[in-house]
Length: 200
Image (tube, rainbow, N blue to C red):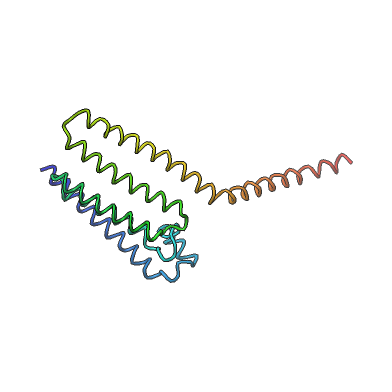
């Protein structure tokens, strides 16, 4: 059937994704004592630039977190109660772990990661409540809460990201603009000097 074929395709893709990810993780583990070297940072830096040296593996932990969540969705496809409960427990464990380790070099990113996890858990819980409640006037507040909560999270996330990247790149952007401005000034200054000599 079509459903079985789609499940097989998704499972195969998932295993391929995990396999490729594991290869990069193995490379990172092998080079873990040379992470500061330019060539290593150029080739593998995408995976650890935002994390503390002791938490260089965290990006892969997040990747496997997503893989596990997808696997739970597929495994408990016809059992929404078990699926929701298992996902909530798993996400709660991740929340405790990220709160303890604080893997990001920038604490704002740790806070963002924690908020994302809280939103995941809250949305799962409220969705489960909506699906298992036939009383309309009780379902509507839960549905509104889901929308409001996610909208508030998106706004707060945008604010945190803007604030964080402003702190990270504000000085660099200022330095670049200053350099560009100085270069343009020198170019125009240099081109105007011959004209002034001709007039003399």
